[in-house]
Image (tube, rainbow, N blue to C red; front, side, top):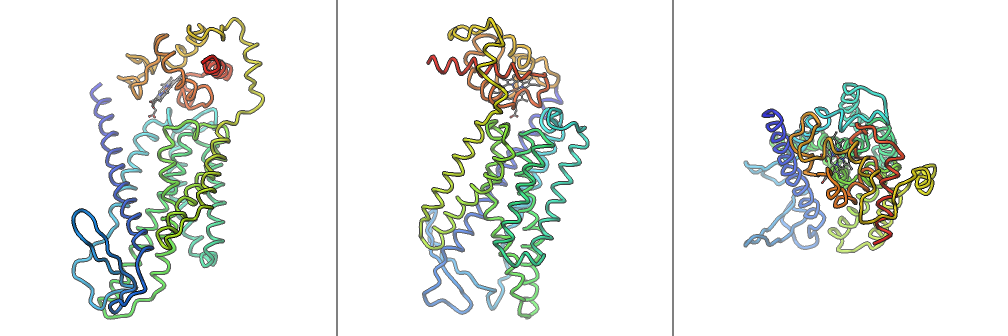
Length: 409
Ligand code: HEC
């Protein structure tokens, strides 16, 4: 009991930390991108300054100047931005380990998707994050790296493959989380292995009175651009955890690549706006289109699961009875959900119903009909990894029940 409470608070603390560091990282990243794109370059500027901007914030005025390569005299105190990124990755990995490795049975492995043991799943998780960075880095360093459009196209194919791979090996929830973790690992590794070391070489050269090779800046800029475009998809994947329509949809493998396109097109809108003051309405239209396709894909169900047929196959169920709860639905929820989602859960290790979500008696079930429908009717997000063996016909019954209530209202 005590250990469950302590573990729960540790998880909360790490999640809090992860949220804070991610805000700090993405916040500084957004700030510097907008600043860089918005620098005024046309007026007379001091020697070595390539752009400047005036800003007003928090009761004061800021005058920011950017030195293309470096100022003639390097200041003694230089502020680096790197721990925001490292801390986000470290806290994120800790959270991945606590939730998905510690709770592999519930969250990581789904035996209806792949028959693998928890340890193998954890090894695949860690291995794929590491290997992904190695491949990505090789790709950027190869000849292809010189052609940024071709590089992005190949990277997209790689992410498409990965979406398929993760959704065929992990639970939908873990698959989406891993797509976010994979992308975020590349982003932090870009900072750790490329951007900061290159900047350090430049600083050392300057201190020694040498003229730094501009190639270091060019490489860092390429990685920094990738990071810029990858931020929004990462946030989507991290949040998607709470939305089974995304991660637990039958076509989740097709939704994931679209999330990358959606994030990139929204980011492109803002980049253009910050650099040229132009609003690209076509990117808004494109983003909306991607989002609508995602919504459409999330609603797809294989035709062999036929609702009308279920209604016939499951006799005696009073689908017309809107106010009362059909006994069959009550039985399904009791058998498949209530051991966890009751006021005093029977499931080992739970002292409270998960997320405070209770479906124990008839009133609870009627009140939570929509959640039950979303999580276990039209998607397979609950029971986690189908741990209580919910049957397909039972899911259809939940669907038929809720859709009937909707129709009557
Ligand atoms: C083995 C225990 C277990 C069983 C069985 C189970 N759940 Fe859950 N449920 C959980 C856990 C754990 C979470 C929290 C997931 C998370 O961290 O996001 C959860 C979350 C939920 C949520 C989201 C609540 C929220 O506010 O985020 C809903 C809805 C839900 N379950 C419905 C169901 C339904 C319907 C069933 C039966 C078909 C069911 N669950 C069976 C463990 C279980």
